[in-house]
Length: 455
Image (cartoon, rainbow, N blue to C red; front, side, top):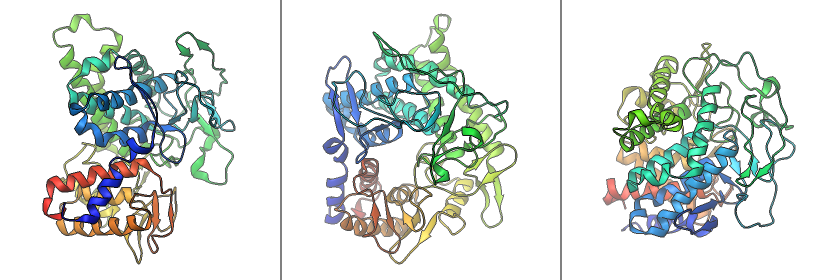
C-alpha cells in the first residue's frame, strides 16, 4: 500500500476483533463455541458479533482454526436465540467455564421475562434475527459446508422459535397481549427457553424516550401488511413506527438466501421433509412477501428527491423520513443485497439521507455525515462514512471520505470510535468499538480491490 496512513488504519482495525474481543473460545472442532464481547461492554450482541467476525470470512478456507472460530459464533448465537429470540445482547454462555462478571438488567420490565445471568439486554431488534441468518448464509457460501450448520443441534432448535417470533410480529398490534412473568429453570440440556405465547413488551424507567416503549411496553401501533415489527433499531433506540424498513429489507434477503441453500441440500427429498426443513424451505415465500410489502408500503414521493424509501412505516399511512448511522440502514441497502447501487429509487434515497432532509445528517467544520439519536446532535458515526464509501459511485467522494477517516483516526488512536463531533474530532464516544473497526477493515479491503490506486 502506498498510502501509509491507510495502511496503519487497516493494520490496527482489521485484527481488532481477534486481538481484543474473543473472550472465550472452545476449540473443540466438533462443537466449537465463541463468545465475543462488543468491546468496552462485556456482552455479546447478535448484530455486533456477526459484523465483528464478518471481515475474516474471506480467510477461513485458509485456516481451520479461524473457520471453527467463526462457526463457534454461529453456535453461540443459536443457543442464545433458542433461549430468547427477542433479546439482543447476552452474557457469557451458561455452558462456558464460570467467570465472575456483571448481570444483565434486573430493572427492565420485559415480556417474556428472562434470566439476567443469561441476558444482558432484551431489546427486540429485528436485525438481530437478520444478522444471525446473514452470518449463517455467509458462512455457507464461503465454505460450502451447509451440512455442518444444519447438523448443529442449537441451530436447528433456534429456527422454529425465531420463525414463531416473525409470525407473531407480522400481526396487527391489536388486540394486545398481556404480561406474564417467567422463572428460568435448568434441565440437563441447559436453561428452559423463555415462553413466546404472550408476545413482547419492554419498559424501562428512564429520562430518554428512545430507551423504552410506550403503550404499556408495546411500542408503536401497526396494521398487518406483510412487514415484520421491530421494537428497537440497530442503534438500540426505540422505533417510532415499528416497521423498520432497512431491517425488513435485510431479513427479506437473508430468508431467500437461506431457503435456496436448504433446497440445494435437500434436493430430491421433498417427501421426507421434517417440520424444521419445511420452515426453512418456505422461508423464500416469506422473504418475497416482505420484499413486496416494502415496495407497496415504504416508497413515498419526496418533494425534492422524488421516489424514495421511508425509514419506518406503520401501514396506517404514516412514514418517517430519516436514516441512522447503524446498519442495516437505508444507506446500506445495496450492501445488504436488497437493491443495486445504481437503482433510481436507491440513488434518490441516498441523496436524501446525505442531505439536510435527514434530521440526523450533520455538517461541521471538520466533517459531514450521518449520526443518530443514540449519540445526539453533531455526532457523526464513522460507520456511516464507511458505508458511504461502500455505496459510492464517485471516486472523488471516496477520496474525501478516506481522508476524513484518516484524520479522525489520528485523534482516536488510529482506530474507529463510535461517534465524533462534526466540529471537533477530539470529542468522541466509545474508542473501543469492535464492530466499527471490523467495518473499517472490510471497507479498506474493498477500496484496495476496487480502487487500488487510492491505496
